[in-house]
Length: 594
Figure 1 (tube, rainbow, N blue to C red):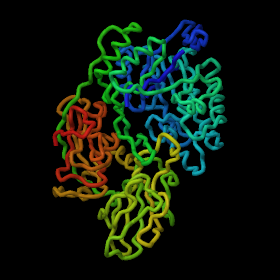
Figure 2 (cartoon, rainbow, N blue to C red):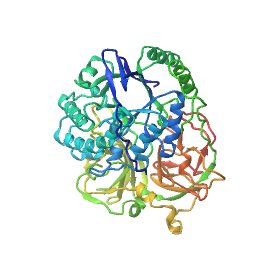
Figure 3 (cartoon, rainbow, N blue to C red):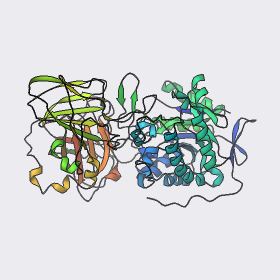
Figure 4 (tube, rainbow, N blue to C red):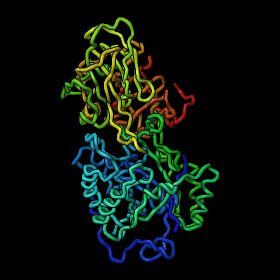
């Protein structure tokens, strides 16, 4: 039997399904096929990540996949999404995995579940929770006792929830992956894989079809496979003209195929991962992936072509595929300055700073994502520019440097390890550090954030730090800064000039009618983060590109009250201080309205 993963291109409380007799899903090795209820079965699947699609649109996306002719979906489970703090589990709202499974079941889609614990997926730290790194000596994805204990606790929670959803128990999960592409990881620890196999069998039972997935090289298959786990492979298809022919050829062979991704979605908030081979490269906010369903869930020509191929191999549902959702160009919105980050610490870090002679990482401060501010005093007069240096490449990942509120410049991991500063003795040196996403693949996933190692100013090693954990998301979700508009002194007058350094801006969007999907563009803005109605849409960085717009799902917007927009611009705001809401995405550096 051929079983492949095909890469097409570069608050609900539910009663679990009841056990039903005479349901089974198994592998018939003799006849080289899967068996569902004793009969040969072939699935045609597509990947979709519930964590990258607003809950409101889950049913819409699943329906479109079903109407294309798919009979299954493949789903990753990001551990860090569901256990953001050690021992605290959340499966509500957009994290309601069982609701998602139930919708797939109602739609008529089987599920290939990929619960990790490591998933890669260009997701922060490959789905592993950042709190694991509070133990600096931990060896991830290995038989390290601390790591195994954390994994065991998590799987005991997750797999207990998943067992009722297995096909043989009345649900729609037909196969379950153990780990993910482990053959690509340096550890090659069979004891770790055996531990996982034991856990999966203990919680899912001996009848569950468990599998591994790896690349198709001998080394990857050697380290990634294990007796008792069905081995599968993933690979790309090359150029588009070949793509549908290859899909047709594989289906003709009886292959069970999954297309990654069928809809990519969005890395909302801080969930994007990062690559690191010779240099750190954060993944962009959009996970559009050039998929058959676009980031906004719209059918593409690729989807229609795939449907034509599938028609030749199975009966597909009658009727049209649901159309693209309505999009709206809401035009320009003017923003007003709230203040620079250094002046907003009472609001953004109400617990106050931690004093430390030495620098502390995000993990040591027990902060997983976002931003942290490091503050100290200049040790002497600097009448001429002197280099502030990170000699060990310890900027993880970007640092914005100010002296007495005057922006000096940026330091960036693997790129810019020094910045020139000037000032007088005892002037306040502030360094705002941005976590741009943890490495999600390879040997560098132990990716600590913040300032790692000493900073040197000329001949001085800086010390005596005040370190502020910033909870910008919490403040915005609580209604700030719009709730402070009556305190006029918090707002600077708009003078039309450019302002540099990390600064918060705010405005409102009043819709002229119903709320629709839209896309926000940042002409003239440099780099930062944007929130709408308290929801963190993700990172914009048009100068680095290629992404030029961020997707704004219509369900986030209100048609009855003004919609609050908050922007943290990290480098320099444009003179016009406005953003543009468009009716189409722009994912490459091409001209567009300004």
